[in-house]
Image (cartoon, rainbow, N blue to C red; front, side, top):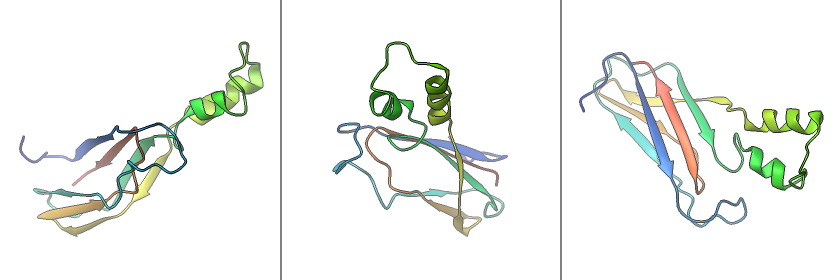
Length: 118
């Protein structure tokens, strides 16, 4: 697949090890993505993540809510809030010929969506 004409999106998946926050030996850090074929360095890059700490209602469900068989309205609202994906801004660098985007550490079972226009 050649360069995207009007922008781009890339899904990054890292799925090794256990889905837990403590001492994640399989986390990936120092990952940078490089894209060619842009007309400029993007002024805005968005990152959406789903992992243990981002958009994860299971941590709340099995944690403080103790997997309640019949959650009340407050618990359901908290689960909805915990499952929402937050759009983060990250910075692109490089040149139009080679746009580089550094990603934060991706824990095991992380799914990240990077989107931008170039």
